[in-house]
Length: 156
Length: 361
Image (cartoon, rainbow over all chains, first blue to last red; front, side):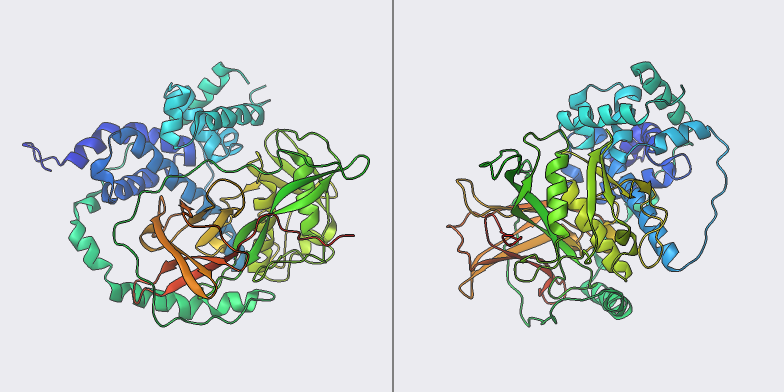
C-alpha cells in the first residue's frame, strides 16, 4: 500500500523502528554488523507470507532481528570451522570503541544479550520481553539470572 | 551484578550503534517476481550443483556412513492447506525417580541422542534422533541442571556395547570417557578424557560427535556445554585441530553440519497423550512432512510448516492423531523435492517407549 506521500506501509513501519532495531542489533552482534542484520531481518519480515497478518509489527521485527543475529552468530562459528578446514588465517581489524563493553557482552549467549537489552535498555516488563523474544517469561528470567552470573566481576 | 550495572552495560553497548541502514529497497520486488526468480528449474539446478559439489566431500570425511540410499520414483501428495504449527512445551524426562536399584543408586529415565544418515540425503550430513532410555545414577535428587542424570546419560553413550535401534548410530569412538559433569552457573562443564580431543578422524564425524554430546547434555535446563579434558581447557579438537571448544557451545552453534531436519524431542508412543514429533528444520518453504509406515503400508500422513525455512532454521511439531502405534511402525520425517515431490533427507524414527540401549551387566 502506498500513502499519499508516496511512502509504502512497509517503509513507514521501517522508519518508525529502524533506529531502535539498529541499537538492539548492536547489542546482539556489535556495531559493525548491526546494520546488515537489521536490513536482512526487515527484508525477511516484509517478504514473509504472514507479514500482512502481523498485529504487533514492533515485536515481530524484534524477533526477526534476533533470529538473523542468531543465524549470524551460528554462521560465525561455522565459518570458523570452514576457515580452519581451508587452513586460512583471517585477521580482524582491531575494535577501537568501548572494547570493555564488547568483551562483556561477548560473555553472554545471544538469548542472554537479548534479555538484558530488552529489560534494561528498552525497559520492557518480562511478559513483553518474552513476546519480543518468542519465549516464555520464565525463560526470560532464567536468561537474565544467567547473564547476571556470567557478568559477575565485570567492572569490579 | 546490580540492575544499575546491567543498565549501564546496556546503555554503553547501545551507544555504539551506527546510523540505521536505509530502507531495504529490495522489498519493492513484487512477490510474483520473487516467485519467478525461484522457479523449480532454478531450484533444481542449484540443488544439482550442491549435490555434485558437496556430496562427495562428506562421504570422504565421514567415518562409517549409513546404508546406500534408494531414490523413490514418486512422491506422496499432501493437502495444500497446512494447519498452523503450535509448539507444545517440551516434555521433561528423568524428573521422577523409579525404584531404587541397590544401595546408593537410582534408576531413572534419561534422553540420549543418536545419529543417523538420513535416507535420500541431499548433503549427506548426519542428523540426530533422541531416545528415552534407562540409566542408573547415584544422586537421589536432581539439581537445576540435572548434572547427575546428564552424566549418567553421557556415560551410557560412551559404552561400546550399546544396543542401537535400527538405522541409528553413535559417533562416540571407543575409548572416549566422560569423567565428570558439573554446573558452573552458566551451563554445564563436561570433563572428558584425553581420547576425546582426537575426535572421530573426520570433520563431519567430529562435529556429529559434538552435537550428539551437546544435545544429550542440554536435554535438561542447561543451554550450553563447556568441555574440558582432565580439568583443563581444550585448545584444539579433532582431526583438523578445530578451535571450536575454546568456549562453551550450545545446540545452535554447529547446526550447519547437521542434516536439514533434526528431531529434538523423543517419540514416546505409550501413555495417555497423543504421540508428538518435534524438531527443527531448515528446508524449502519451511514445509516438513511426516508419514507413518506400519505393516509396509502408509498408515498416516501429515505435513506442517516450520517457523522458518529456506535458509533459516525453524521449529516444527506434529501431533500424531492416530490409533496406537505398533512397535513395527516407523515414523518418517522429510521435506519434499520441489522437482518431483520425492521425500528428501528422510529421518526414520523407530517407534518405542523406553529403550534398553545398554545391555544388563
